[in-house]
Length: 135
Image (cartoon, rainbow, N blue to C red; front, side, top):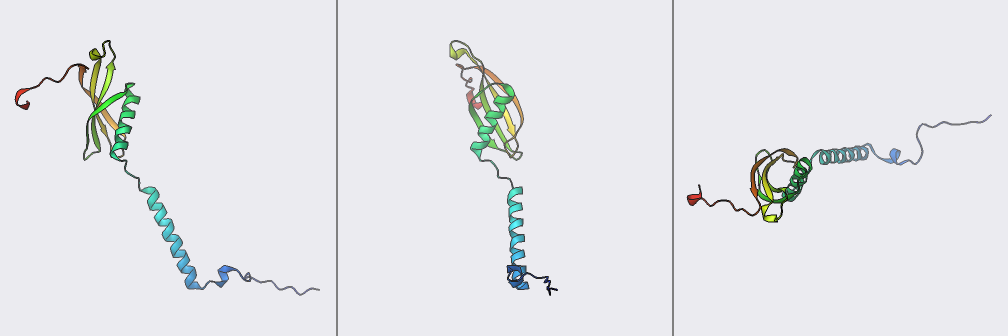
């Protein structure tokens, strides 16, 4: 017959050597770390103005099939961003006769396109008419 003694607690484990106070401190630190990580993951980083500009050009090109040539207006609004983008609508020879268009593009604060519309169409070689008195 053997005399075997079953023990509930492991000998020499770190868990049994920690005092109740140090266990509580460790748990609090782990909970704080988890909360901070969750907050970082739920907080989205706002895109920079250059990122917004690039996104607007790319999204407009994808929707219209026309590449943006330049951005003539760019501002942050209460609703997000507003841009005016110049695109080549119809290529002609000579190049100065090509048809260009200005598109008003609106984006949300994260840089996602929410709407666009063509506001002007013109020949590449034509300048805006100068109006006396700025009217």
